[in-house]
Image (cartoon, rainbow, N blue to C red):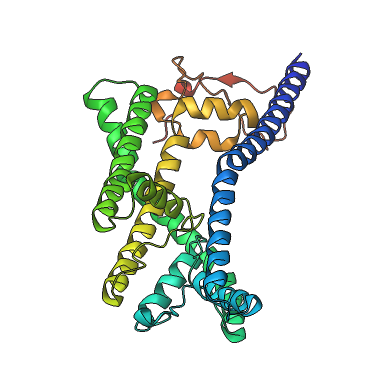
Length: 327
């Protein structure tokens, strides 16, 4: 009977995993279809506008050859993708000073990457490969370790306070704490920085700033938007330092929130439907949740003669209370 129940549970989990994989595939296809439908008309419109400007420029300047113009535009766009200043007004803007290099190291070790900073020499590319091979695992390990240390202060202590002083059960206290922590993270790490970005970058709306914060903390890049592109070099250095601190602190907080959600009993129950019970599930089990045996243990029976005594006399049993008293 137990074998049948285990087989049915395994079959249930396999079917659920297959359904989840199918749902994930549909989600990916849906995302591709939506982005194609929304972004392609904008791309076509922008392409038509640039083509019209190129045609007008050639008509107004017949002495300029089209091939030379295409070559010039290709060079300028290539330098622009590398965030290299080519205009005369931007010649004071230099990359790969110490602050910019430090920013490149942080965004690379956190696997976020940068749309602007990329190694251009062969020596720098080789060093980046070796450096990231060692640095990325160490960075992820350090961020996880910091989140584990922060978990006791951010999660365990508040949940214990809610359960002890507010009289909430552990599942309700953990669920309430996770919800409050989510709201706090959204306000401090997303909404508030987005409002500050809108204040210092007038050309950006709130959605641009919110998207910029999201893509940084999700380590998927910078979304093609380079904050502070028209700022002075000193202001850009300050921005890079603030972005570095924001990225590191935000990643630790996000990892801590992930661990907090995984410790909610309701979430653990849902996960157990897919993976089955594991020994790791006992990690979050409290002592008051363990079953306790109310019956006193039975008295251990002892023999009146030593086991090693060779005798034909039968061994007699006696209780521990009838042991001979030593003088």
